[in-house]
Length: 161
Length: 161
Image (tube, rainbow over all chains, first blue to last red; front, top):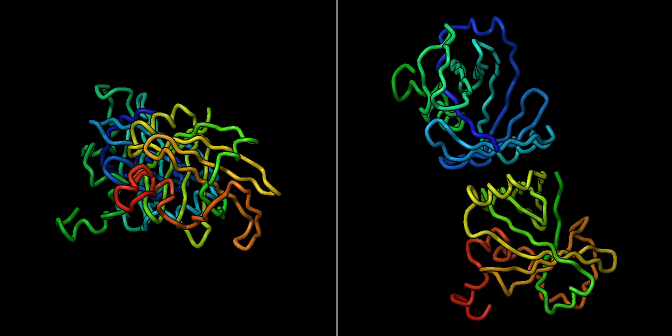
């Protein structure tokens, strides 16, 4: 089990791609409630099953297991709620931290989110210049929310996203 | 992924223990709905995470992964719904088939169920003399039902179980 502490930001421009390579992610949820998440993910050629517990501040417990990619593909098709999340994930190092940038596809196209993982909630972090507004803890940016209410539908309720 | 085809019977007497050794099982459910089950189990000294899909006749798909027993213990305590299922599982061979006999503890004490796994729904199977009434497909005997409505509470609604 790992404790996951992360901050999340919108991405202002595409310069993060200069030093990064994207991997295609497909993921879905077997269970998707505020207090527990069971996620199936295919990242490149690997499959994963992940259990996440409730958020407490920026921290949540995460249990992740690699599973055969064939199993993951069946679970995505037969057990997970539609629609799936599809995105390219880029990884970039900046001043001692690793950033993960998700460029969403399909019903969430247009949305790009950057996450940085921290050792403690108080840890200082330098922000790359392609980073915009912080959205840490805003539930609507959770991947588990984006299957229920995808980005391309936000403007229908709230004006331009 | 495995297809699981099994028949389930009540157990009439304890003679099944003559050739069998029991292992303590503790298990709980992260998700427990008619169309999907995510189960955490500790069997002896090993931990497992299992996903089961909907029943179609006697058949359901099952995906099972071994996980660290420490993770399983944390998931049982922190993520699974209470109460947990606790039981001794005995394994016994009889005329070419392997029987699994579950002797339940705690809120389900007094209940003993035998299961035999088959290769097809039509396969013939010889019944040991300790086997009683068949309860295949009766949802109240599912482990996932026994956490919601345990055996020791059946008589309160229906007369003697």
